[in-house]
Image 1 (cartoon, rainbow, N blue to C red):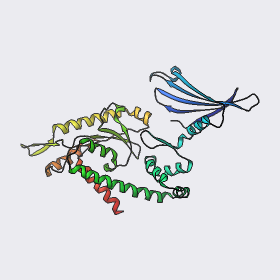
Image 2: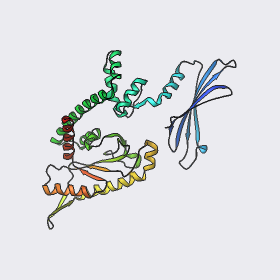
Image 3: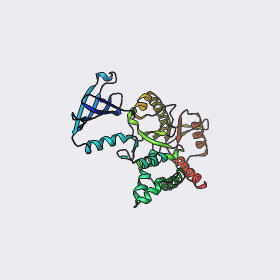
Image 4: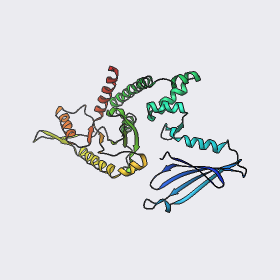
Length: 332
């Protein structure tokens, strides 16, 4: 989305503010805000045009179908003015959840910029928990180091709670969806700080168990979640070695296909979500390793060493990684 706001004047109106609020290859929406004066220059009325352009990917914008909605008011300080001010403040809009957006005042916006937009819910709850304006003001004045220490402490406590939940899931036979839901909520266990998740359906992968993740460096990986009871290896008794089971071989083939799909949809991911696709990696969570023989564990390590851009991770390893990450923070 562009941040440019064009302000011009012309015959019959005092000024017009024109700005783009949404754009894809096939659609864009522009707002035109006009201030119309009387002949003597005094305020007469204002109008807001919401203009939607729709076209096919092969067409240019001059060929687009145009639809308009026009709102008008003769009260300069009421609804339309408030709406325009809210839209102009879009640089301070932050996504709180998948369906909720909040508008921040300048001080709160600076606070959110310090700790990142992915943690809006956390800071919002803190701000709302204070009963006095003085307490809120105090929080807004904390320095970056103090704020980061507070955030890390809260995050560590949340991770410990999530670790306990995962241990309980591992101890009992549960629905696979509970495992998958936990991992989707706790991507920190992969050792990489993933800041956003995206639906794989946008690149033609129709699986609720798979999702695209964006890392702090702005690049994307794909996480593929499989059942915990999948058999990982078969034994070749004649050669006294282990090889990937039929199920695991199919999963690896699927992961190779997913890498190609992501690279093929590089332009769409960049245009729609500003995601960078460069040598994407696929993390496959599958099976259990607690009951694997030592030679099977060696086979898994060798397999991961030979795979390019694909990592096979068992559910038990997810638990071990979570425990290790938590212990590192407790040693600091």
